[in-house]
Length: 295
Ligand code: ZEM
Image (cartoon, rainbow, N blue to C red):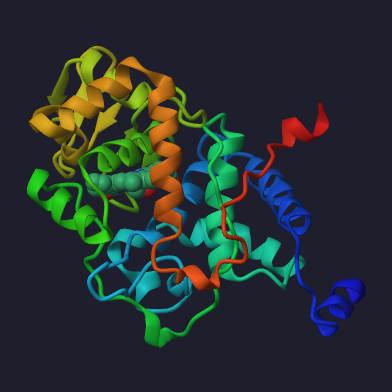
């Protein structure tokens, strides 16, 4: 709009209220999903925020959410990112309305809004990411491969700077969404409520009997009772590895503990690769849910 152009021209410095407006638009747009999946872009937006951040390598300081490099090839074409164009396109509408926000801030704020609006925990977030260039694209292979075991999961997440407890907490995001055969090759949702953030991922891992699915697709598990839910090999590892299992059991038994630990680990994930001095605020903000603003 003319007003926004004028703001940019006069060196517009956005406030927390401006980011709250973006958050509110994100909440609207992820709900406006008609017959896409379960009527929400929330899960795929969470996956975008995760894949945009999870490329971080603490040793070289490369990758992470700072430069929003998934806008560029070849990263947009990396196998792990199949299907994420859906989330990028949904958020592009918002970028057009709020041209002052960086893509990295937009994608991570959307990851926060999606979790919060799907009844998850509050996730501290702050702006400061800047748009980078194709030259910042990280190499392929930095995100986890679902067919692998515990050593691979540790290699990948330790490289980002996470420990076993944080790994298990982050994987609880699989309460949301589903696998698509035309994206990863895997098929189906993890829980019966894929648009509500819960600790059901862990509960189901322990409460259901999981058997290998008999099909032509990649090795995945299905619940013996209903055959309508799935687990990836990497999900199942969380019940087999002794250290992972301890945390997974704790999160199955205590939803408050899961919410607290997920919030902290996810907030950390979304800041990977962003130099501290780039952040506008010394402490991350708590954005309000749409419900909190209307009641
Ligand atoms: Zn996922 N994830 N993920 N994940 N993920 C999928 C979907 C979703 C792994 C993985 O290979 C896959 C984390 C960790 C790990 C979400 C969030 C987070 C899919 C299905 C696969 C194969 C993709 C498809 O076909 O559409 C592996 C191996 C992981 C670690 C070992 C972490 C951490 C996440 C966030 C914090 C979400 C929300 C989805 C659902 C996406 C959707 O479109 O519904």
